[in-house]
Amino acid sequence: MRRIASILAVLVLAALAGCSSTSQLVTGTPRAPIDPSQVRVYFTPPPGGYEEIAQLETASGNFTYGEQNKMDSVINNLRIEAAKLGANGVLFVGAENTGGGSNVGVGVGGGSSSGYRGGSFSGGGIGVNISPTKKFGHGVAIHVPNPPPQSKLPAQPQQAPPPATKPAN
Image: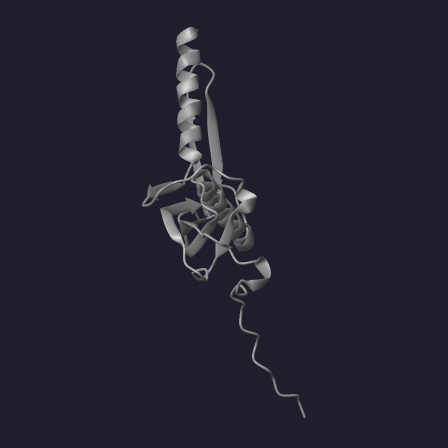
C-alpha cells in the first residue's frame, strides 16, 4: 500500500511540473523579488533606458478559452516571472498560438458469440477532444531606473478603425 502511495505522489508531482510552462534565461543581475502588481508592461522601450535582467517565455493556461483571456494570462505570467527576478518592467516582445485544437473521433464495433447459451454483443463509442490552443508569449524582464509616471507612457497599440462607408443613395 505504501508503494502505491509513493508512486501516486511522484505522478502528481510530475503532472504539476508539466503544467509549469515558463522559462527564464538570466542575462543580467537579478534583484530582490517584488510584488507583480509593481511590474509595468512596456510595448516599446521605456524612455531613459533600462537594464536587461532576463529573457522570458511563458504560455497561457491549459484550459484558457478566448483570445483576450489567453493574452491576459500570458501578460500576467510574464509579470509574475519578472517580479520573481526583481524586475520592475517587462518589455513585451510578442506572442503566438500553437498546439491544441479540436478533434472528434467515432468508433463502432460488433460481433457475435455462440456458447452454452448463445448470444451476441455490440458496442460503440465517441471521443471528443476540445483542448484549446495555447498562446505563447515572449518578453524581457527589465529594470527601469526611474520609471516614468503612468500618464507619460506611450499608449498601447490600438486597432485601426474600420474604413468609412459611403451612405447609400
